[in-house]
Structure formats: C-alpha cells, structure tokens
Image (cartoon, rainbow, N blue to C red):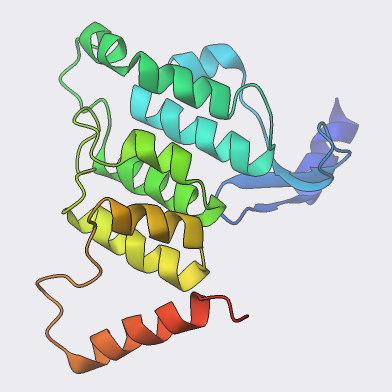
Amino acid sequence: NIESFSYKAHHRRMSFYGVPSIFGPPITTYPGWRMELEDKETVKSWKIGKQLTYTLLIEAHHPGHNDGIPTFQQLIKELFKHLNNDNSDEEYITITDTEKMFDIVIKENKPKLLSLILNNPLIPHSNYDGSIAKTSLKQAIRVGSLDVVNFMIEKNVTVLSNDMNNFDDIKSIIFNILRSVEVD
C-alpha cells in the first residue's frame, strides 16, 4: 500500500536503542513512537543472540507484548538446546549481543532479567568480573537504575576497574552515585 509506505517512510526515526521506530496508532496501550515488529519466521531465522536482544527491545518498545519478556525467558530456558542445534562455525551469541542485552536491561531497570544474563555460562562475556558487567554497573549508576545497581552490587560486580588509576575517574563515579540516589 503506497499510502502506508509513504507514511512509514515520512514518520520514521531511531529509538532510544538505535532501532528504526515509527509513530502511529498504538498497537498496545502505549501510544507514540514504537519499534516496528518483524514477522516471527524472520526472527526465528536469526542467531539466538540476536533473537534474545530483539525480545528485550520488544519489551522496551511494547511493554507487556507476548514476544517480549515471555519469549526472552523461554529462549533463555532453552538456550542450551538452541546452542546445540546451531551447527555453524559462527558465534551464536556475539559480544555485541551481550552488550546490547546488558544495555537494554540497564536502561529499563529490570534486575530480574539481568539475573538471567549476568554470569550465565552460555552467554559470552557475561561474567560478573568482566568488562561488560563493570561498564554496565557504571551505566546503571549514571542513568539512575537503582534496582539494577543494587542487584549488581549484591552479585559482587565492582565499580572500580583495574584500568581506573585516575582520581578524576573515581570522583566521576562518586558524583554519579550521589546524583542517582534519591533524596528524602
């Protein structure tokens, strides 16, 4: 349909997560800008890492959608099976996939979802003492995702890293922590 095509092309922009979004009538109870949904067969043809990231993006753009958290949890539950069925030499979950999963969960302040990712031996570079976790903790502090900050500290993710020798870096972290804490 030419009319809907021109509408989409004219009203397209990038979302907070860097994915194409359109503005139009809500398909959920949340109006406004939202991510375009892919058809299920296309999503199933993707590597498992991209599928996991996509389900988190759906939840961020379409809260409560069946292809969001429920699908993410199911994919995580069956992750070992998915990995065994993948006979290619390519990475099934890339470092970029892991970084994006952390990024979305941090921005959405979802510690329960983070518990499925952090230190998961089937998700590369998700260990609590790795650079992605440390960077994510700093990001959670900056954006004020206090539930995630609390969860990550309970799981022994450290704020300071080995490459942080500079007093200004430490001052910056302290400032971000103080700024993100609620004042009574």
